[in-house]
Image 1 (cartoon, one colour):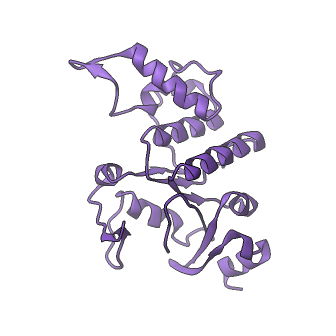
Image 2: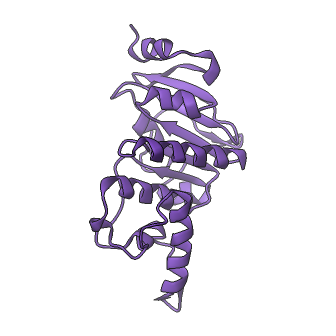
Length: 216
């Protein structure tokens, strides 16, 4: 499986095919015992998530990594809170968070709102804003539209296309196969931990995708 610069690469497969496991390996959250990873043609071996972030690889996972008792703004910039002599600069934090929230369509929400007071869809958008704030070279989105409305999902697709146009690579994982066809340049299909097909999005149909996913 090869992901090119500025490409939206859809990744699909049945439950248990290995999609999330592969993405956790790429983002430094899980070790692996065979196979090789390459980044810019050189061997890539992330020791942990911090290593992956330093190399520009960010994961917005299906399981949200937000802290309920912190605000939306604090979650977006967690571990990178603007400060001076260990004192958080809240006006700067709220301004930066507001810009990221506007990007994902959350501009009507106060960035100082605690995460435990917002609905699931807005929590998922907060997770996305958190990932986007890293200015990544490779952004991995694992089921990013699971809790989103159709307009919110379409807005996300616009954001993804803009990121790709600016040179960011995006791996897009979803069970919504029509969404994958709509937003992806290339689609790879996993079955039992193996890539069984990787084709330009315009050359594969929904029926073919389902057949390759199931092996039947």
